Length: 111
Length: 108
Image (cartoon, rainbow over all chains, first blue to last red; front, side, top):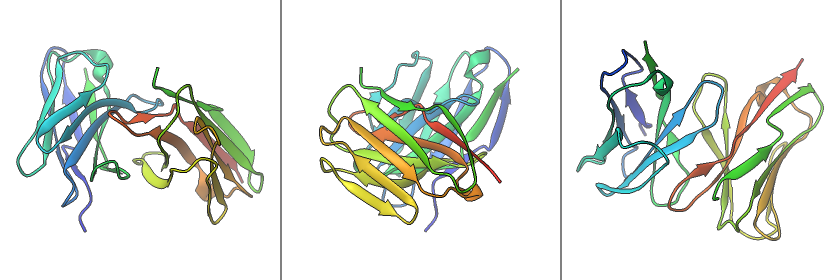
């Protein structure tokens, strides 16, 4: 069974630019979660999508947004990038409130 | 709020010593999950606890859920270098709140 896949692995942007991160969940999982993990810190909840709808979002500004497609894959968009957005962005998928399966993440670096 | 606090933030142990991390919530938890993140890796699910006072074991790891369902602990007996990583607890609900994590270093 293929795990959660994320692309790209690394992304380098400059301040003010926009970034798009992608996630493909495990087959059969309808929920996708996005987390931000700054270097040496814990996981901060960003967004939760289920069945194509945004179910909840964490305490992040509106320039963090995303969507979930009919095939349950998901995109995370970050507009007007700031230096402090540099982090590892992790995607996880699950079925309902079952344990989450994480991808390897996208390392976003803002120069 | 709905955050879960973990202590300690860091723990260094000699190989063979025991290790415990604690997770505390100000509100009652419906369940709690534990994850392990190896350095450079992603979190991997370890276990879920649901019942008040529940105790589960996985080899050298013992997980407990408090009677009031407001706290949980993970205890590792006789640590090994393979136990190195950050251990997170997480509460489920409308949002997944991960604890602040405990980073474990095992000194050979």
